[in-house]
Image 1 (cartoon, rainbow, N blue to C red):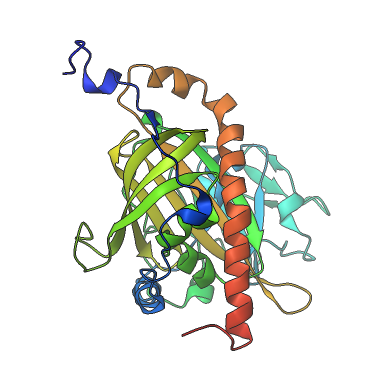
Image 2 (cartoon, rainbow, N blue to C red):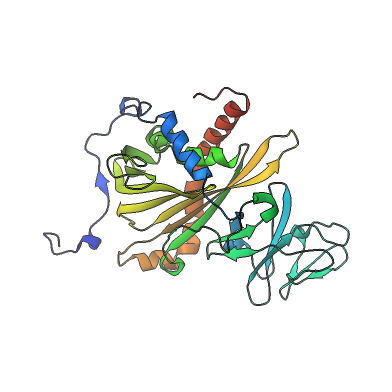
Length: 338
């Protein structure tokens, strides 16, 4: 209870920075951002099982009338919903003459090829075999055993997250010329935040590293950071970055405003472009929660908030994809340090 009789959750979470430090005068982080530390964290992430599951995109992008098509590691995939709303997925080429099913309409839960009207209800037909699909309420997943080559899992490795009905969620998607490991490596380097994204983050301190001292009590990076709102107004939080599987990094807000919120960054290999360079899709899912009384208003206004949330994520990912692309360029040419 505060001195004015308000509970903690009623307090305004904003802070006014007393003496903002100019960007060029903030403490350098390059000594702490040891390449070997980041590389070891990446290696452990890449060694974890995925069960051959890949993120296709936002769950709400797959509707009763619209399919979702994507190429995953060179394999065409199409997903849609059947008459009961269940997510279905399978090869993206029609078994008749190979028409692209990603542009075919859905009628009464059936995917209808727009070339000759062949209808697929999600069951095997004429050599067309469905893929396992999973809808976690925010993201649509597909299992491609012929791509992943791992021991299959019944469901994807979805990290702990708030219930969708209690959160305001949004999904951002972007594509870069790189491989999934370059995206994951970017997220396993929290030291770049205040330097590379000064428009969003200030006063960033890594307080714990994997299996190290401080708050890193698990294989993750603990960070104290303030989200910049406007001018000197910031929202300080503590966050933990972990990698539950080889193509996912999750930021959990562990203390401060929005405690319990998560930001999931998923990397999906798409295949090569016409020049032979790898392309990777980044799908970022944000689930924001709060125990404040007014948060119910935010949930009700979610359709209006999502474009703003995606725009904010897009600004960050324009920089982070450039970071990942640069890393891939250096790796592929043998010029990457370390």
